[in-house]
Image 1 (tube, rainbow, N blue to C red):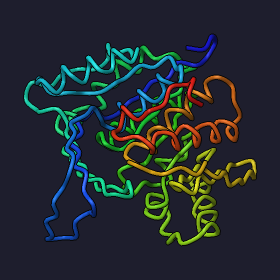
Image 2: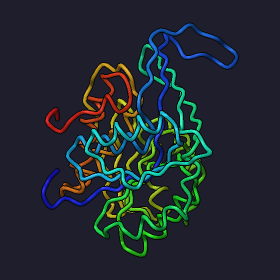
Image 3: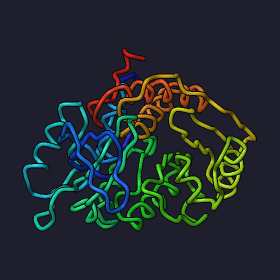
Length: 303
């Protein structure tokens, strides 16, 4: 943890990932033979929390689990990463969230999420927690929890002038009213296309999508483009393409989560958005050379 850095509060999903490696991803109706199988800790919220903690962030995780063995394993894992878990609660009726992930020989993936208890992280449950959050916190959120809960956090943070980084995944239709109070939004190309209606084929389309997202009121837009890097745009007429280091991809699962977690810590430590994005690209490029989600997150001394 770096002295005088802003605390980071991650509000989001905690899952167990069940991962099957395969030569090719199946088409609809097709069955393919797989190879190695892994069961690892995941969930976009938890992944981003681990990424931030490994970068030296002061991280608190807020989430919801079932009352099962997956929950106990998840909490134990997060605590081992020096993440504050006092605001993670258990639901006695729902199972913990699970993600079913297929990864092909090129590192590309298909993911199906069964949210389980993540879907019970309600705005009422969050209200008491948010009152205890310091105003100088940086909040990271995703869309694997109820949308009304995300909206309630945005409304709360607007009043306290707390910065929010939103990873709009999985892709959903968000109104400008939803995004106008955000400090930063970090969609990938697919999500940016879903949010803007702009079909992205090249960098000029990425710029058009980023510009349209700025029109929704978000201060910063960072569109992640996988191995091609990230495109940064801001309300200050700042437009910058940042390439990613070239690596051999093994597994791209949670690369975006690595980017976001690293981004939050870099900003908390006083880096500019451009410098933070470059650091986040480097971290993500390391994560894709390893298998798994949280296991793939690099430590700060690896950058």
